[in-house]
Image (cartoon, rainbow, N blue to C red; front, side, top):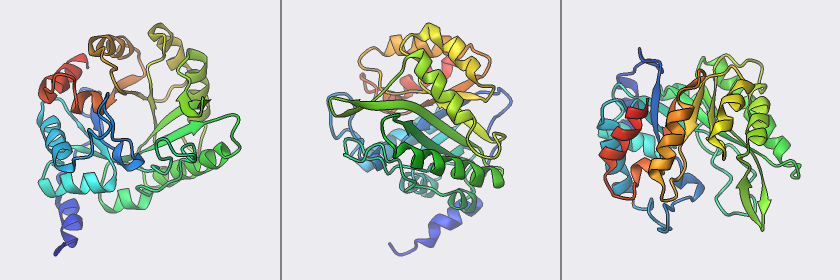
Length: 280
């Protein structure tokens, strides 16, 4: 309230590190859900609503060995900056959060979060954008165009951008992503070709509905891949096994996981994070 300039000062003095360390692997904790109004974890519709609790969980997760950094919107990253939790950590800014969860305009993923110039100004280490494509929605072309320009703007600053592509549609009015192998492979092909260069593009991909399809799906691009976590749905061990198999693929370089680690069913954030790190 009294010293808003403290955020820029904390960003200027933050100790940075390379995006990828000697292991060549990345373990990123995701916390950009609230900006889309997505606060639910399991049956608790407001699990992520308490910001102090979310920050406590994030600080704990970031303190665990093997955790490389965090993906979040400006409000959360700046809180973590002021808490000193981003020293020697990777900080990724979430770029488009306009497609609010459950809204009639959910598939209109406008860029309402970090811009490339914001990520550069705050000395963050990269960005992430969501690319949901509905073949029946002409508005998806606007998303594709905006995403490609964002990729260009990041590449011009030599900043990596993690593109999270999905082929989606509405099933009984609800936006649903197609996680079949062919659909994910097609989304990979589309995302890989966006922008004037792919030099700084990473892919953030879900594990396919049939985990055995991930091997040939990942052959759809030579770009480095991190796996999207998502919710465990009560079967955390099954999710770990899917990640373990996919992490053995040559282009898969790590994990970006949010709610299933920050709000595990047993409440033990440290143990959940340590288990995920162990998979790497």
